[in-house]
Image (cartoon, helix red, strand yellow):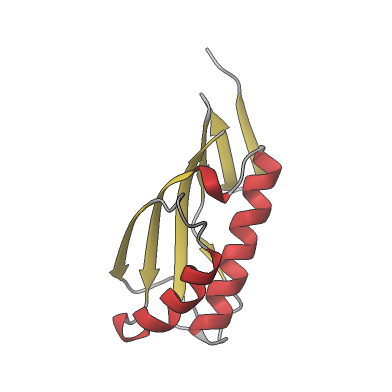
Length: 115
């Protein structure tokens, strides 16, 4: 059995879990009420920080799920994503529209990476 490492564990969930060489991040959200671009920037900064704490980085992301409250914001989110995504190391990615935890959240990103 491998050890399980939990990062920023709270009563409901951990922000990241590491086991068997895989890192799963909880859905990351930005500042409620901010623009889609600003929320996306904050989310991706959080992804970078959590992956670093887990011992890896964005070049090791294998899968990403992006949830938008409104698909009309797809281009705005992608403009930030494209500047952040490591060319030659981009993950498999899916983007969908969903009602998020509060109407003030416009984007949520969930990633899985390897060590």
